[in-house]
Amino acid sequence: NSKTDSTTILPSGSTSPFTVTPQNGDFITCTLSNTPLPRIRVNKIVASIVDATDRFTTQIRTGGVSGTVVSGTTSSATTGGGVVTAAIASFPSTATATGSYQAVAGTALTITEVISAGSSNINQYQASISCTNSKTDSTTILPSGSTSPFTVTPQNGDFITCTLSNTPLPRIR
Image (cartoon, rainbow, N blue to C red; front, side, top):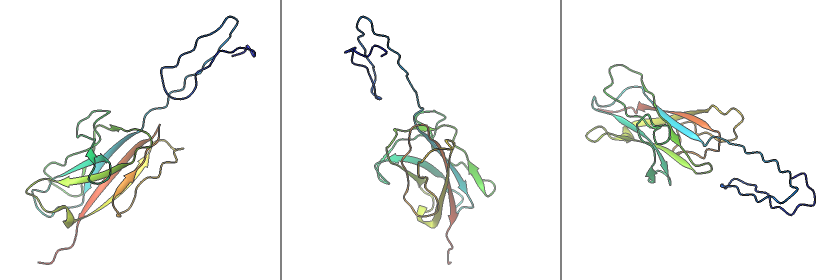
């Protein structure tokens, strides 16, 4: 407000709606800034499989490894982000998520996967993860390596793409 003796209360912060009741003589300039909500997607690479029926579904969860699955395997830009592998003809095989999950900034997300019923045990695979963020100036710490759980706490503006990879563990017959 360029009127220095005004008693008009000006809005600020990130909670909308923003309301202002100008008084006579006020000259108010407001700036509204929008930052995209964080998005995340999880792709899948399978080096080889233990059993021909093995199929994997990647998941994004809130509340840790046993928390609520919040992602789907659709192409949705708000509730997608996961992927289901199909029958695998050659290796390595890559499944790319077509959607993304729109997250809440500052909420920890855990990336998990399940193996389809009737398949091998997920513990017969070594999982590892690598992630990138298209927001180059982000300070979000991305999960990497093979030490699970794989957790990330995205911030506004982040667009995170993670690739979850599986390699069968050695077996003795």
